[in-house]
Amino acid sequence: MPNSVKLLQKKVKLRQKYLQLIEDAYNLSQTDDAISDFSEYKATKVLHKINKLNFVVGNGHLRPQ
Image 1 (cartoon, rainbow, N blue to C red):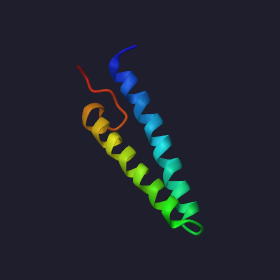
Image 2 (cartoon, helix red, strand yellow):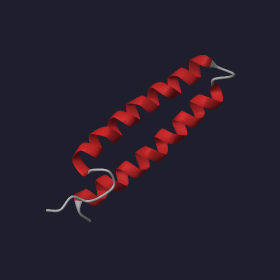
Image 3 (cartoon, rainbow, N blue to C red):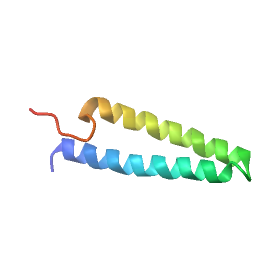
């Protein structure tokens, strides 16, 4: 499997994780601010990884070689 396909798969998994963390942060914001903030912090770190992959792979499309 080419590396670019692996990177795209990793990006999809990271996006799913990011969306889950953001949803958790929102749901926890009414009950526990500290845990909500921590979830949001982790989501920010995941988003940073996604942005780095966007630079390498692009927005979901393989770059021509």
